[in-house]
Length: 108
Ligand SMILES: [Zn+2]
Ligand SMILES: [Zn+2]
Image 1: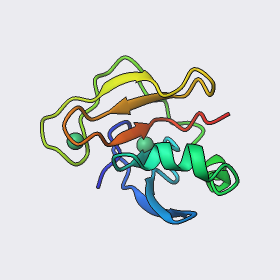
Image 2: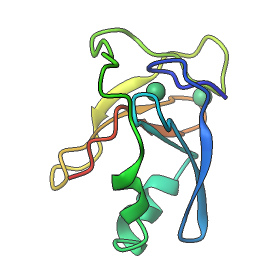
Image 3: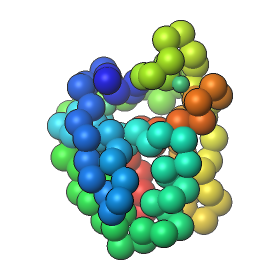
């Protein structure tokens, strides 16, 4: 599966009981299946720690204005919105499967 933001190959990353797809060595983005992101946020405050340490290419510039396509559904454009007011994490969400991506990683 390719990263929708920088087209790097995503690698699986274990976060608590969940497996997410991370853009390691690329833009540092994270891709969650439907409801996984909410689970990490609510139940795994500490388990979410690995998400803060994803290797990213500092020289890589991701165009924030470009519409991104869902890595799972061909031809489906992702919708961008804030995941939560508390975290101010901007995410791209697939309108079909409900899968969510955070590209690049901005969990703080
Ligand atoms: Zn990427
Ligand atoms: Zn999709």
